[in-house]
Amino acid sequence: MPQFDLNKLVVLHLYQYSKPRGEQDPLYRVEKTCDAVKLSTCTRIIYILTSDSLVSEEQSAAYKSLTDFLGRQDMYSGGIRFERLDGDKAYEFLLYWMIGGINPKKTLNDPRILGDVRALWTKMTTSPSARAQKLVEIFSVFFKDLFTDSASLHKLLSVNKHLDQATLVETFKTACQNCTWARVNGFLSCLSGFTYQHFLDNTYLEHLEINLRLVKDRILNKVELSPTGAVISFFQPKYEPSEERLKGIEHRLKTVNELIAYLNALKASSVEVKLSAQALIKDSQTSKVDDELVLLDFESSTKDENDDSTINHSLSNTSCQL
Image (cartoon, rainbow, N blue to C red; front, side, top):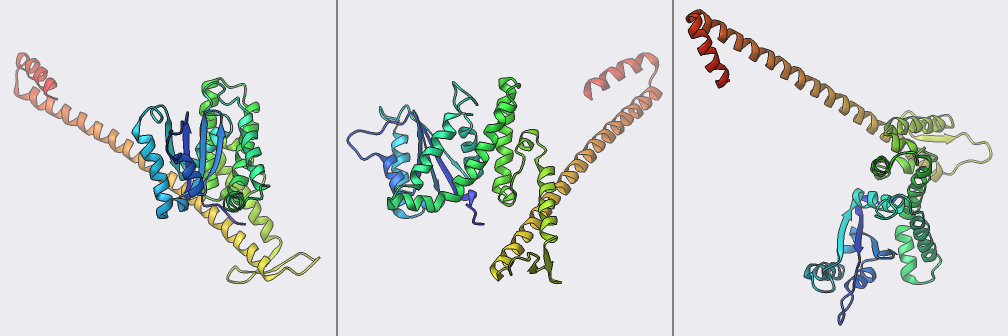
């Protein structure tokens, strides 16, 4: 199955944009030159593009014209808020925005955003224009994944409405981070029907592994492997699978094994970090005990060398120095 490389994702987020008068609109120039999908809601404009669309001389010039305009801070650009996000941060932002997280007046209570974005994308997919069709070709997999993730998280808002607002915000920010991690690293592309509540509960790593092992078992129960691990037959009596299908099954099994190995490596790394932290604490405690013993030895030797009146004076000075 084709995947969109989220490491190349770029999001341009502008709030209260006002185009300059008497000159070409730099934002429109970016939209047309850099293969950007425009999503806008009231005073907020979001452009979705890829880093590959910012490499040519023409594309770089278009993007520079926008940043130059915003940097002028004149009567047109002075009130515009702008941020550029890349890779996983861009995807995480889109998820949180789509579930209503950045609406200051209706935080996590704005279902229209998800519906509006879906309507805009649906309109683009049915447009006959060459530009629209090019964008659909570039972003079809991306928007499929984005709608799956955002809709699944959005459904959980009603389930968790008993939480106070501060806890709700923190919970869903964490969920968007966790979901983004799973999407960027290819886990969600390999699984169907994953329970997104695990992203809220921070139990997703355990359940990702459980789901992956179930997928692996289902594959192994239906295939015959060669000694090298290649899929040589698929036990489906209705028809003989093509070589391409066998290669696809083999690739899926390989991907599942790699993802499981990655999770195991993370667990091992986590254990090492914990053991290292415990060792540091133990060393610190041992060092503290040694220091106390040194202090006691020092006090003891001082006591042997002085009379009672001198002892009190000497220990008082020693304590201050230490």
